[in-house]
Amino acid sequence: MELTSILKPEAVKVFSAASSKKRLFQEIGEVAHNAYGLDAAMTVDALLERESLGPTGVGHGVALPHARMEGLTRVVGVFVMLEKPIDFGAVDRQPVDIAFALFAPEDAGVEHLKALALVSRTLREPALCSKLRANLDVTTLYALLSEAQSVQAA
Image 1 (cartoon, rainbow, N blue to C red):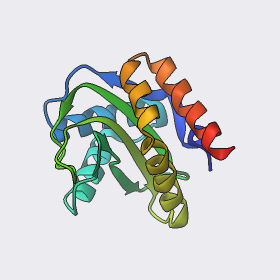
Image 2 (cartoon, rainbow, N blue to C red):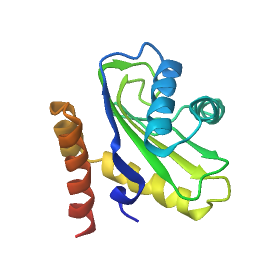
Image 3 (tube, rainbow, N blue to C red):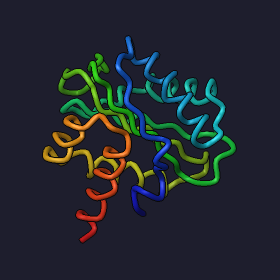
Image 4 (tube, helix red, strand yellow):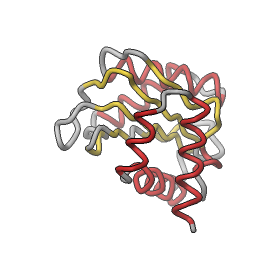
């Protein structure tokens, strides 16, 4: 599995401000709707439901919100950079400015876990996160994510 197989260039966005986790999920829902045709409200509800089980902030300013959704045939992602970090209830209590949301079919099983592991491994690289934070152009962000994936695969 490759990052480019789950992330479209139009699903990469930069937001100047999201006042809360819920507001961020609403923004992600809009991006998921525009990029993949997902129902924005259902997307937000699915993310909030999963988040109620425990925060998906993994530390170092990174969050990996994810949910299973009806009607999907494959795993898809939305990558968001926040110009102003928000509290996310992360394990290290650091505010989040990088979020990679994943949406999987309800019966995705191992594909969902593979995608989560791939994104987690990719965003665990401090050098990549520094580059992402230094570039708020969506085309550059997509290129950095694509390149990071191919470097890891090598």
